Image (tube, rainbow, N blue to C red; front, side):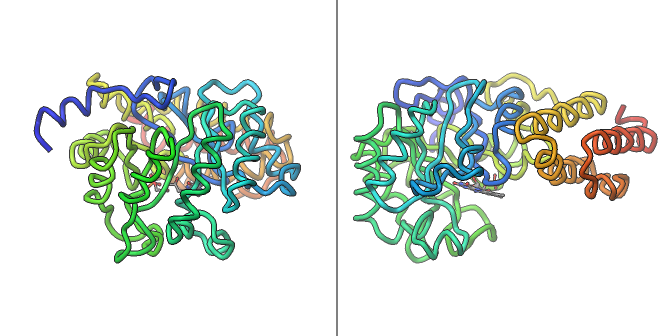
Length: 341
Ligand SMILES: Cc1cc2nc3c(=O)[nH]c(=O)nc-3n(C[C@H](O)[C@H](O)[C@H](O)COP(=O)(O)O)c2cc1C
């Protein structure tokens, strides 16, 4: 890519159908992580969009507690992007209509999920093997939707069949408005280096926005990925677990403003406590405390201070105790590393 193209690509904003995103950092869909409290935090720190956890298109699962929680967008700042998982074109179309009625501003189709349970049912990345079926799904969802439809995929099924560029073209023809590409095949799961070349091929195959995803963990990596692939935006998943402020650091850097760096320890503590309160509020205290445990672990990990977290914090079922273990944890971190404070 030429320097001019790289510059244009770092200056542009992302247009998804009629929606102009304010920024070029997108928080990745992560089942069990990117729930409403997490998405709210991600948006607060500067993600232009935060995609929901995948929601099954299956009508019989629609009223399950999990689906109801995943499709609850009460009070969520738009644009709300809801990701659908399924393989039946009619069910996917129906699920799109249902989720639009519940507040989705964007419908995202999952062609990226590699887990066994999902792939046995030929959904997620397994679908990339069946291009005619992918076409039928895309066409059915686009024609059922009054909002932009996006697609998230991997580079292909395995290293030999990297058909993401072909699917990208098909998607554009079907009316898909943006694509995100995790630069690994389904076979690679989460291992091995990111295949920037295939993401670049996807970008040059279509004129809709392309969002690059995979192992982006700093403002520098994000810039590098945009330059290497020509992509329009980046999507960040695991690196933001336990440090959602990273999304804002990357967003700031891509917009050619300065990298604000990490918040001070007291602000991190405030964020964690607010996150826990939001989880208790959203899920109710019992479920909220259990869901909060993994987030607390990630916050401690990202501070390189897991050893300072009392194990009772991950065992308690009492929100007051959990909050107090977290406060205690931050006091210990501050005491160990006064420079953090
Ligand atoms: C816990 C977890 C859950 C995920 N759930 C989804 C999902 O629901 N839908 C999806 O398209 N991708 C899902 N992914 C994949 C991520 O969106 C992303 O593509 C992948 O983690 C690579 O990006 P990263 O290196 O920035 O984490 C999940 C990943 C993780 C780690």
